[in-house]
Length: 79
Image 1 (cartoon, helix red, strand yellow):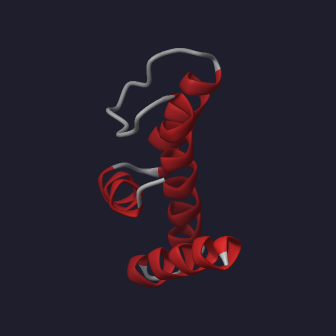
Image 2 (cartoon, one colour):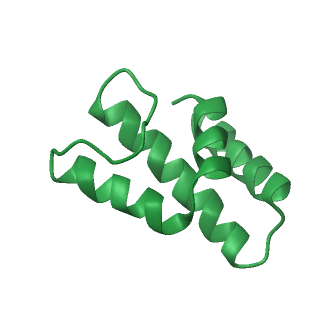
């Protein structure tokens, strides 16, 4: 998982596009958007993080705050 890649995906794509990319990967297809990552699992992780951030923004959270909250969730799960 690379936080800069997740941030880039969340900034550049809307929720529907990210969800379509997730479905494509789950169906072992190539997503319509370029997703950074070393393998399909890494790419799926980046997309899921971006989707989480976009859902928070859709619920009214500022983008920066949503990204920070995601990064904090990651740090908490590692610690």
